[in-house]
Image 1: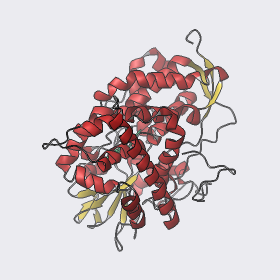
Image 2: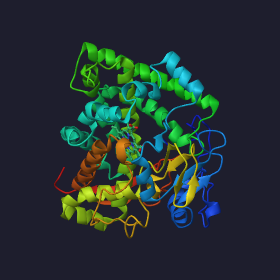
Image 3: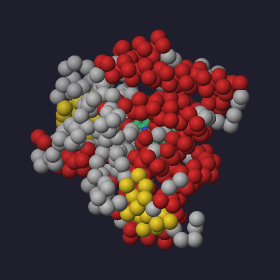
Image 4: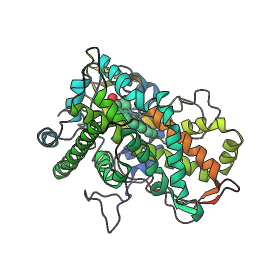
Length: 449
Ligand code: HEM
C-alpha cells in the first residue's frame, strides 16, 4: 500500500495518523485503533501475562456473539490444526451487496469458487497439491530462482549508483510484484494497473475497521466494482492464453486435469485461483523484505555474520519473519461448539482473531523472544504462515524471494544504514505490519558491479 499524501489522500478518508499511546495495562490494549501498530509488541506482553484469551464483547460473527483474541503459540497452533471445531471464516469476503456485485457483474465470489473447487478438507488438500503447489510451494518453486535473482538485480541496478534509496518503492514492493506477475503470466507492462487492483484487494486489511476488516457501505461497493474489473482483466488474460499458450500458471490452470474425474476448471475457478495468488503474492512479502532490510541497516554486525557464513541467511529470514510477521493477525475461525481455552469459556459461534505476530513472541515459544537468534533450535517454528491444513500455500515462494533478496543485498551493498533524519519507521494501519517507507544509505560494494 502506498502512503497517502495531501495530493493523493486515501479514498476511504480514514484516519491514518497516530493517536494510540503505549499501553500500560490491559484496559489500554486495543490492537485495532489508529496507530496501535506502533505499540503492538507492548500490547502482546500485556496480553500474554494477563489475558492470553482476550474477549472482545459483541464482536463475533453473528449478533449476540463475541470475538476472542488468541495470542499464545500453543493455542493458535491447536486451533488451526482442528478445522472441525474451529471452522474457517473467509475474512476477505465483502458484505452482501459486494457479493451481489461479484455475482452479477463478475465471475462470482471467492467463496463460490472455493465451494466448487474444494468443498471438503480432502478436496482442499487436492486443490493445493494439484493447482498451487506446482507453482508456489517448495521444492517446485525453486525453478523460479533464476527469474527472482534477475528481477532483484534489475531493480537494484536502477538505484545502486545513487548511494541512497527509498527501499519500499524501489525494491520491496516491485520485487514480489514482478515475481508473481511473471509466474501468473500477466504482461509485465501492466504492473502499474495491476498494482492498483492489488491495493484494492488488500484495502480491507489496511483500511478496514475493527478486527473484522469492515469497510463502509460505499467503500464496499467501490471496492467490489474495482475488483470486478480485475476479474475481467484476468478473464482477458485467460482468453489470451487460450490463443497463445505459454509456460505460466494461467496456461497451466486452463489445461490442468483436476481431481479424480480429471475435469477442466471453469473460467470462474481459474479467475479465483489467480485472484488468490495475486492478493497473497504481493504485499505480505513486501513487508517481510522491508523488515529484513531495516534489520540489516540497524545491525551491521549481523551483516558481517551473514557475509561470513551465507548458510545463516535462511535462519535470518526465519527470525525476521517470526519477529515482524507481515500478517500480524486475522479473524478467520468460528467456533463450532462450546469450548474452554486456558480456562476461558468460548461459546459456539464465537469468532477467533488469531494473533500470529503475538504467538511468535510468546515467551513460552523460546527464550529471548524479542531478539534475533540465528542459532535457534527450530528456526521455522513460528506462525507467520499459520499451520495445519490451511497453512499459507505461498510460503515456499515467499521464503525463496526473501532468501534471494537478502543474498543480493549482502552481495552488492556495503555500509547499509538508515538514512539519518529521513525515517519515522511508522506503519500503515490495519492488521498487517508494513512500514510506509524505509530510507537507506549505502555504498556500492567494491569490485562486484
Ligand atoms: C511473507 C509472506 C506471506 C505471509 C506472511 C502469508 C500469510 C498467510 C496467512 C497467515 C494465511 C492464513 C492461513 C490460515 O487461515 O490459517 C495465508 C493464506 C494464504 N496465502 Fe499467504 N502469506 C504470504 C505469502 C503468500 C504468497 C507469496 C502467496 C501466493 C503466491 C500466498 C497465498 C495465500 C493464499 C491463496 C492463502 C489462502 C489459503 C486458503 O485459505 O486456502 N501467500 N497466508
